[in-house]
Amino acid sequence: EEGWCRFERLARLLTPAADTTVLVVKDDTTLWQDHAFQWLTEPVGRGSFSVESDRAKLATRLTDMLQKKLQYLAASGSVSEYRRWMASVASLFRGLLVDWRSVRPALLTKGCHTSEVDEFLATYQFASAIDTPHGTSTLLVAAGLGNVQVMEALLAGRASVDDRERRNLPAFGIHAGMRPLHIAALHGHA
Image (cartoon, rainbow, N blue to C red):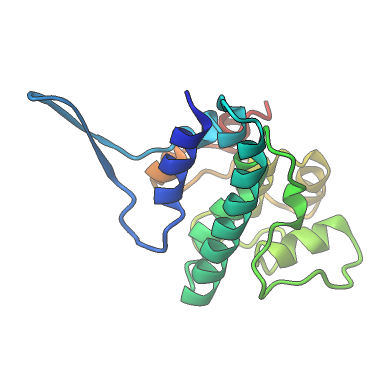
């Protein structure tokens, strides 16, 4: 699939609007609802481009759009959705020449954290390794990132290996009951 088509699909999800449902019309008799989570399994950077320099243009635009989305979510108090987008950044930028670790909303700046786990907890707005106030635990978010060191440290800090997602999040391809291994596999880390 063309990289531009993938970008268009993803751009719909990166708008501040709450409804990210897309209706797809195949022909006169076929219509279906698409939550467009293919952005996770079919990232923009892995699409085909007839002009290779377009890939870099889309990387820049995608970075801007994502930072605005994260800023909006953080400001509006949508902590769970904010965490999901932050946990999806590595997958989102697959195939693009972007240091995804630098993508964060302007309101978050790197602080003087004593460890990678402290940095993780601050970035994803968790109070502790066992904080799960919005249905998405620290371990589920770390699994989405594929960060083994952080997952090991969270487990050592009493995070539960049996954590499950509590909600359905169709835009992310996530269903209630998914465990960290499911989330890691969805993001291509298992």
